[in-house]
Length: 324
Image 1 (cartoon, rainbow, N blue to C red):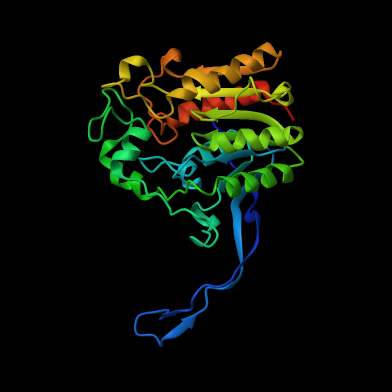
Image 2: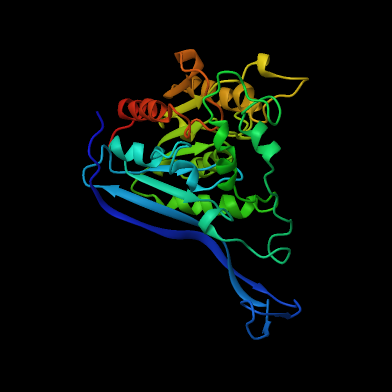
């Protein structure tokens, strides 16, 4: 039985970024609306670039005083956490029902964080997500149009799913990381990090630099290139970690040698981090949903028909391992 949600504060802010000056670009002749007068737009001047957006919701009586900071993956935005495929409230609201304050952010150049000029500031072009790429990246089936048997993903809503995805860049990682670093550094009263997919790449780096502010880390099928044999992860020793994985990840789901793009996270970096934390005497939990008898979840399990069940499992873990 979930508690009533009594919200006392809700708002948003931008963090990170810097003023950047553009010079030498040619003026552009344009019109700002159909039939409007011609104007000369000067693309030169001072601009803000590299900022990220954070939306916060605070409860009247939270379980712990610090928020769960939900961090999306590549080609996505904070919309990932807001609702499910069938229109139910998503993890943002479910975590509030479980008594946790919540932050939902849009990384640099995602959602409401805005873009930087190309090629004046961001050297590379945006990369757009095709139907076929998202199908295999989100592990909906072995190839586009072919679903996994037993999947909980509602394929009739795939068009709607595609509408929430946004362009991504391969040349702005430094800006993205800098904003996350500043975001984590600002959370001096504490934060619980929850990152999905590529979000783990940036979240782990920011958490390592600001471990004193981090009260827990939840990695939801997250990727990272953090090599524990080369990087000192001892600052994580006293931080509870939870690794969560869905279905369709084993060798039996490889077709013609194809492996899910995030398979390395299952087999290598995230498993190694989990084992290393245990070797350090830390608190780390590996939660495989299929091993718990929960089958059929893809890379989008926060949107699927049992999303509340998985959210409650994560919240239950937090209540046992993270304290105010």
